[in-house]
Length: 239
Image 1 (cartoon, helix red, strand yellow):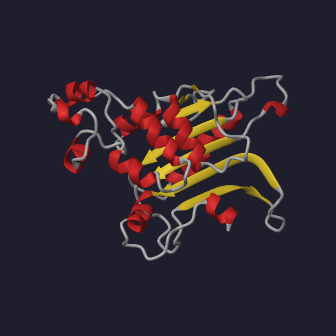
Image 2: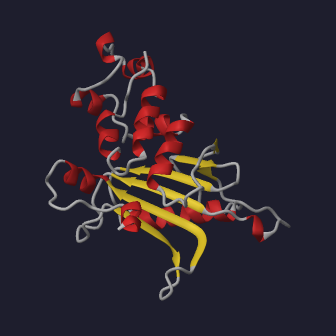
């Protein structure tokens, strides 16, 4: 049967903005088959669990969507899920929502032997060649943001071949879900970085869009442990 494997993870993310309801529906329609996970972990799951998994213990042990392999299986093989996630959490302009994607190799191979190799969790593009990277990071480290910038830069530079015009370059969006807190002095869980004029903030270079979501901070607010609701980029625009 088809299982909703995003129970704990998605129930929190669903509240980030209204569009995440679509993400939940798509997860129900396109969830992974439990037979795959039963075989992978050499366990048998009761048929009663095939429609919805409620046990936190089972989720944590077998189907934690934050785990590397599970995350890649969900978002790296189910286009509807990754499109819903990107549309919900990225600062896309109205009319620029994602309606199609094509998966690309997550390994960023250097062009020279001296170059540094790197691998991302999910890498895809739309028909208009906009580039999207999705990463799940369990623990924050000081060099993670540099790694995000490094991988985004490689994707940006890799769009053109010799002789092609710079006008063909499309923006790179990097969505990074962090199961940790890296900005303890900030109330917000949603952090959006892009190239903007330091004085005239309406002057933007449309090249890089880096989004970081602190999951622990968001879930703390959701469970009532945080007094004030953090605000997403969409909520800030509405306010």
